[in-house]
Length: 307
Image (cartoon, rainbow, N blue to C red; front, side, top):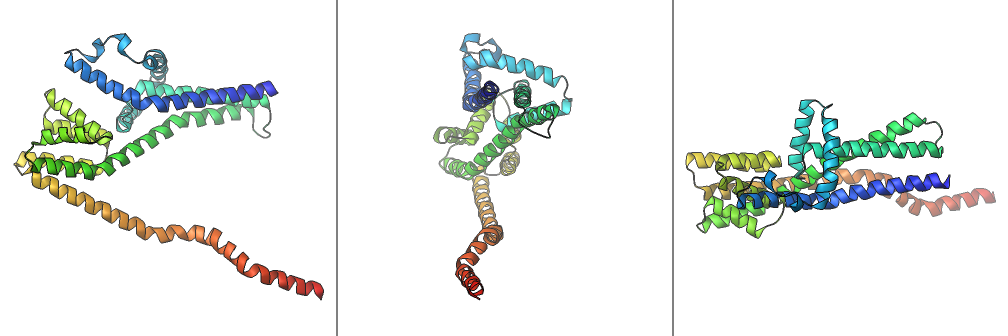
């Protein structure tokens, strides 16, 4: 019995360790993927022609297994589901393919099934069959990659939205100083860090490779999925086509975005009293009543006991 529990704890610890390792190296792999593309462009080579030994050790050993598992899983998935997963990975900015990430679904499901099997061998749960334990933990494990992807997308989009006003201010100052729009984007990538400057650096690389500016900006809006950034990109493209001054457009966009953020902050501040009502009624009022009425109730009980 003790051996089974120890084996279950070891399996759980191993699964958590692999999942933590994936969190730790996801951003590093994304950066290394971008650097591989830049290095290939500088050497006039295609990314596929990079030598195998230049890839990270984790990618050379573990990712082929994930890719094979994901490829097997994707054969069973409809095309719309595969395209949706690929788009969500772009929004998350993880720098992995849909096949690789689909492998995580399979790994998590198998890991959950193993834990369910160990749970069944332990035999400590009453009222739940062995098949039920397998299905419960396997399904729960399969949901973990999806929850992680949702949280990653939400965190990245929030970081982009928070950085957008500062980026617009720097773009406005740079354009007012006499720089062109592309040079202003380069200044943003040099002075700032985060998901949005990284995406703008990718826009500059695409423009250098011959992609039209409006197409590169449209791709930027599609990769991020942030409505405010999509509105900004649409305004810049329209101003470029109509010959309107970029300086005025940037200033108006920055002012509009800050006004929108102020309105959102005011709206959240107005919602605060309503959100505080539930904990106030459930926790604070009963405690207050106990403190105020407790001594009186005890005194009344003593009086009745004396009678």
